[in-house]
Image (tube, rainbow over all chains, first blue to last red; front, side, top):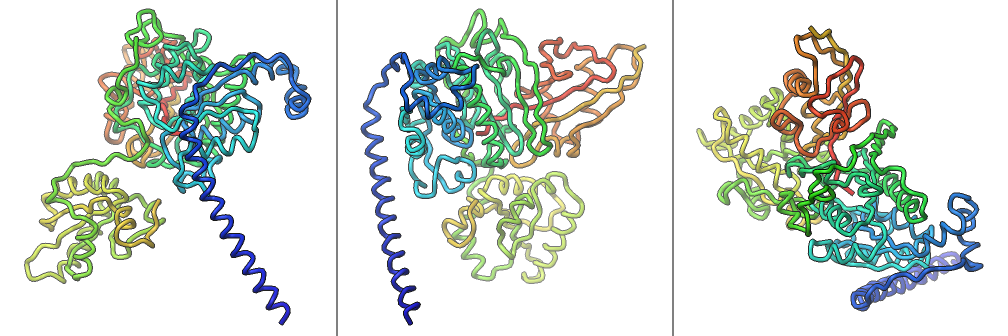
Length: 455
Length: 109
């Protein structure tokens, strides 16, 4: 029985420790918030020049100090360099981690967003305990544990045209680790107007791109992309997906370029663009154009003399959050609550799930018919047959001659509206009522069934 | 009379809304195309290559790739791994065995 007793004692001890841990986590979260209040007030002064490395610094950085290309002079430059990290997500986390480890003097961290569980697969400075906290405080706390000599300045706010110039001017090098088009133009223009080099990386799915803008006579972002892409052609990581290692590889390459600039070695990717295809395993380097004399930002007669409204310039918002489309009138839509009521009443209908197959594999409502939006757009013959059969079958449950209502669902309620529009345009469709479910399956998970997966 | 040309046309990170890559939507998912451009009176340049692509490779929704007689904003054209701006953009005359890569700028992070 002694063994049984030992088990019980240990169980009690584990429970007690868990309680202590949870209380510690709460205190940490509160301390991080308090820190936010105090740090907002502290103005940033220029880093003082540094004449020599201490004994501890020589030991700590010894492996990079013995590189003749870097040496003591390079390390001293790093120690007095400041880098502004715009975005503490998939790119910003690995970038900031390596810059802090290498001994960069000061890191400014900009991000308005909070840590979400779906960030953790790639945003490697954030941990489970700090979900819901501002990313900049979570990142700063991890970086301080890594290297307490590095000064981290968190800015828990979006970079805006009102704040960008003031902020960028305080730093020597800027790393664009953002996730949306308006911010990329904003960061570029702020760097051009303040004369700061911009190290820019981006990633989506299995692909990444890296380049250095506005350095040593090279092009700026606007030289290469004078016009923003149409908003409907832009895909975010939330929408298109991304593999964490891909942002990790790009963030590390970006950190390397920042370090070389800060240490005085000069970058490798000014005027050239590195393409990374993670699925094929290819790196490819492209020769970019020179600075354009007619560039609106860095040209000879620039028209960008001050920062502008980048969200209206790009026709999209400065976040990577999904926009809500409004294609249908209220009478063409149904809430998840009303749909649940209809489902429980046993009223005959057809539920059509238009998500791509990869998302249906994640989770689905068992009674839904699955036809991807793409197939509806293309009038895929096999899908039309499936739909026709499902309508015929469903009609057997209705009263003689009554038409079968169709409800269309997707993840968030955007694609479902597009699908309703398509179905409404089909005159041969044997259904008079086609509506979509507002907010889609994520609203279903939030309001109806808490066990339904969210993604 | 210009002789027929063999060129490689490749679609890199060309993406469109939502979850589907444009190259799978527009070009049947094929990334690299080895194409033979027939002999014609005037020499082949990028301008008429785009017309040829629209007619022969684009499957649907050309507006996601083409705007007017050029590519839409956000797409970069690379000729033998160099920015087309260095080579005359639409007016660049294609040579046999040239490689033309279309990529779009990525914004995620």
